[in-house]
Amino acid sequence: MIITKRYIPLLVLISMLVCLSCSRQAYVFTSFREPANAGLRLLTSYDGYNWKDLDTVLLKPSVGTQQVMRDPSMVQSPDGTFHLVWTSSWRGDKGLGYASSKDLLHWDQQRWIPVMEKEPAVNVWAPELFYDKDKKQYLVVWASCIPGRFDKGEEDDSNNHRLYYTTTSDFQHFPPAKLFLDPGFSVIDGTIVQRAANDYVLVLKDNTRAARYLEVAFSNSAAGPWKNISTPFTEKFTEGPSVVKVKNKWLIYFDAYQQKTYEAVATTDFINFVPAKVHLPEGHKHGTIVPVSRKFVKDLEKQLAKK
Image (cartoon, rainbow, N blue to C red; front, side):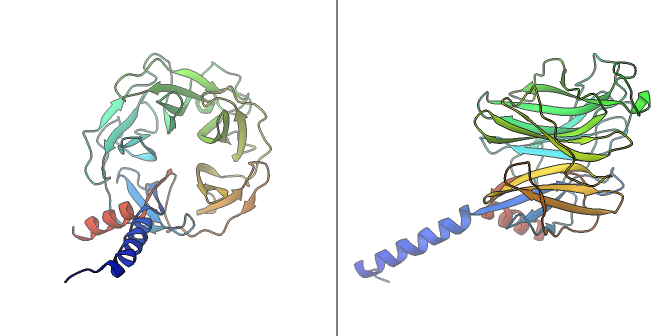
């Protein structure tokens, strides 16, 4: 067929629309199900509110004393690589699981990273990844209990957690762990959010027995120090915050584990929070949300459909 000049603008427009459709935002949400030894699952969404389970295990855990995969946290690096960390054991481990992938289907060999090997910690829980664009490095934040180190307050010494962190640029070299946050009470599930240059929010769980709810703190650095810890913005017995920006709102997903539901609130300023209407598959547990292109999600779904 001969393409005349009058058809060229139409073809250009069609091409532009196809490219726009491919580049529009979509999301993947890391997940696990009980029992936690099954492995990594993923949810997908095209709007950030309604989620579909891919209904398959993409990575079965093989590291750690108990070889479980809880709390899978993932970020995508500037070169497109997905980096994943997770809780590899309930107790008795001083490290966490790690693996990476280009397409979420094929993974490199899993590694166990002993982030607390020089500390008398009894656990390493709920590691969270954050990529610091300014410093071109990753922060790995997790909760550990070191009996006797802090005033235990209402908690038993074996359940009195603080947040720790390390940094890496290549997931091969990690400096010794440092204290990330001691708010004066047991704290877990620290999730970093960057709103703008020198403007960071930390979503955290107050894990004391009288609380067990989510709060936020603020800093001008991804590594803290953190200040102005808020009053709780969720009910009791909530944990596992996952944060994503959808248009002009931040959505904070969380596990209301006593009610056995997964819920979310919306905010524009991390001061005022309103319930958000979301839909997630039953059984979804603590993970992180990673923005990707619609084309990536469609290709991923297509590849899984062939299996």
